[in-house]
Length: 189
Image 1 (spheres, rainbow, N blue to C red):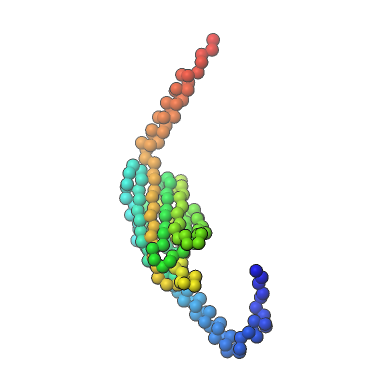
Image 2 (image 1 turned 90 degrees about the horizontal axis):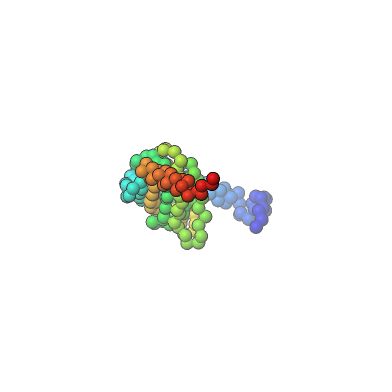
């Protein structure tokens, strides 16, 4: 693969300066349309995702998000703060939607799909009781692979929050192991 900078040779391939200007204008209009679509998608803020308890210390929630062209969506969650392991799974519902990156509380994850793969999953550990924020960047691609057109994607999130009873049980177990180890020592005289 080689790159040849724009030169007079490239100009000679175009019939006239008017054709060059018309071609350049088409590119500028296409870029403005893509930027407008991305701006419209960026401006839309999804409703907070409600995470419901599904077991001891585990909360889950899901969402469906309509998109158009390039998009950057930022999700918030209710309840809003967690400390523990958070797993996220994203999948294309219509479009097709391609995911580029996602971040969970400033932990970034990039997506490099195999041919035909459209699901994106990752897990992160949240160290502090802080509000969860998920940001997703992607695009709905047309048949030529260019951003454009409507689509939608869905996501699910699971937050596993250790409860105080879990920590107490862990500490009690470690204390029991320490006592057993101490009693098992041979006595030397």
